[in-house]
Amino acid sequence: MKRIIQTLLFIVLAAQFSMAQPPKWLDKSKRAVFSVVTYGNDGQMLKSGNGFFVTESGVGVSDYELFRGASKAEIITSDGKKMPIESILGANELYDVIKFKVAITEKKVQALPIATQAPAVDAKVFMLPYSTQKEMAFKSGTIKEVAPIETKYHYYTLNLSVTDKQLSSPVTNTEGQVIGLIQPSSGADADKVCYAVGVNFIMAQQLSPLNLNSSSMKSIGIRKGLPENEEEALIFLFIASSQLSEEDYLMMLNDFIAQYPKNAEGYSRRAILRAYTATSKADYQLAADDFAKALSLATNKGDVNYALAKQMYQYALSSPEVVYEPWGLEQAMNEVNKAIQIEPLGIYLQLAGDIAFAQRDYATSFDFYNKVNNTEMASSTSFFNAAKAKELQGGQPEEIIALLDSAIARSRQPIGEDEAPYLLERAQQYMNAGNYRMAVVDYDSYFTAAAGNVNDVFYYLREQAALNARQYQRALDDIAMAIQMNPSEVAYKIEQAVINLRVGRYDEAVSQLKEVIKMNPEDGEAYRLLGICQVQLKDVSGACASFAKAKELGDEFVDELIKKHCN
Image 1 (cartoon, rainbow, N blue to C red):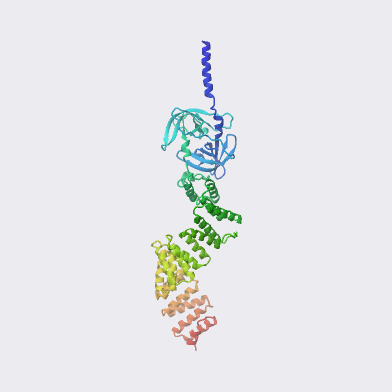
Image 2 (image 1 turned 60 degrees about the vertical axis):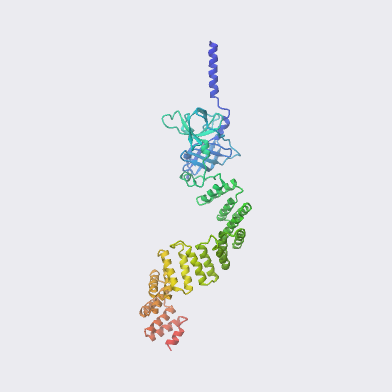
């Protein structure tokens, strides 16, 4: 009997001993678990918690709340190595999970293999907490419940108690394959059960152009990684370019090139950024090298030629302190012509017109703008550019007006402040063509489009049109407004006197001219006009004295008046 009892006791103790033995894979797996520390903008520690590697290349997972408000983070391995977290790869605020990339200090790290199948209810599981001790104090339990997340992922309730310090630790099956990430317990059974979100759900979290601007992403200051889909990554780059600092955007471009080394767009975008931030010849050379690499990879080389031409054009216009000889307007024209030879797209032709305009080759510039006007890119701007080139080329007012008509016809109606200058330009061309009444109409339309936000020069110009159109009262009203806005401008007061002289209001003209002479006693024109008014008022002696003073001051037009009235 005693022997039987001893045998039974041996069996029980052996069973307990075998149950207490750690799994064979544990010693290796514990190196995949790490501590996470996050920091704020001031460099002070925000929070600390746990996480674990899921790939040998340094992809890790943890809980999202650790990273809220963080501008920097690092992990500390079980053997004390510190490694910075370089980018966020995905997150889900609702389920409090996050995926990130660690800048690992070795070729590869120990990672937990991911289970391909969800364990069944009652299956045994292990929780592996972070530990710097040689012996790892793992915990074991069973699956109490499996619930679905988004139909194909899982959320687990575990017969397992955990402490706050063990949150975000991995849960594995008996083969050492990770199935989930520990989350807090709650309710009456908090001391008996805990929860775990399936690791496959965490791995499915991806950054995309749509969630880059989400509040959950904006709350994290750590730079964001690229989507795994190449097309989405390109869109992601476009959005990030207007949101990231130049330094962070360059890092993202470097990541894109490393991830998609055969995509020309990455090199082209990096070239543009490098040129924009260049402070030395070496910087411009790096940009040029990137453009050359983009050209070697591009399927549509015309787009790269165009991007390079545009960069050269902008460089030439910026009057840079750093002289980089390979870039200039001539080289820009050569590059854009290469693009046009591949396909004469409107955007290429537009740039060629701009470059020729900058070179003051207005005939060539007009030809390119005119070609744009025969493409689907024809717009109010392209017709206006053509009109300016034609004007500087010496074209006839009627030709210029026809182009401006097209520019105005393609503008948004009613015309607003952005397109209002087209009306001002056409008004001036009507003046050049001698069509003064149409000039007045365009000045009126400009006033409406500009919502009345005009200056004294506008009133002077409209007065000139009204005067030539023999709309004298309008002319007087406008010149009075010009004087009111700029009372120190002598030319306006002279113009006012000229109008009054034209309509026979000689006394008013005399008064205004005497005011001009008081403001500027050396104004010969004012004396000549005063003399003409005095002639009309039958004051010949006074007129001759005024003419003599005008001659003394060098007026070029007074001699005929002296000959006619004073001899």
